[in-house]
Length: 226
Image 1 (spheres, rainbow, N blue to C red):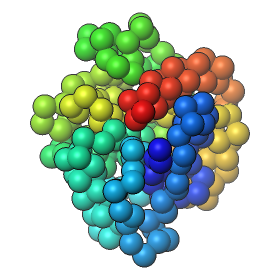
Image 2: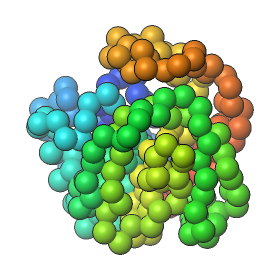
Image 3: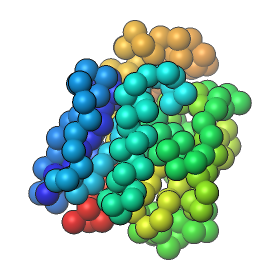
């Protein structure tokens, strides 16, 4: 079974999500629409993942519009869909939500709290929270019509949601390793964001617990694909 992973910049890759896919023998193919001429067919896709990136869903970029159409088609086919950060915003907008600047940028390690519906959710059941997770975003979104809010933070109310039974958007980053965080901090595309951070980011601050959470959440999403 094959999962399509839409990557917007090389440094925002699957990270720990790839480990969960491997454990469940799910083949994964990266799709780099910013550098590829056309979107792939969904005919052989068992699930779709949309990763993050420094661009905005509201930018007038051809591949952004292509991805939102693919999300709509995947939802119509009842395929499992997962979006992380920009990917969550893509899903929200594709399903009728609005994406706009958050009152403040949320960059670094901050806690999220899980809502009542998360206690019985297929991905988040059994995680009481709050949990310290990694963030890197300047925009937020309204929930799409009918979506269920699963997590919030002090700086950003809409941190995770589920639409239907198998479409998920996560504003925060459970997929990152310490090496990924260090790499993000070194990227030219992120220099502007880092100037707004009040203290240095420690890539290892809560990495062990983040890996545990990642395994639980993304293993469960992989089982939805299967």
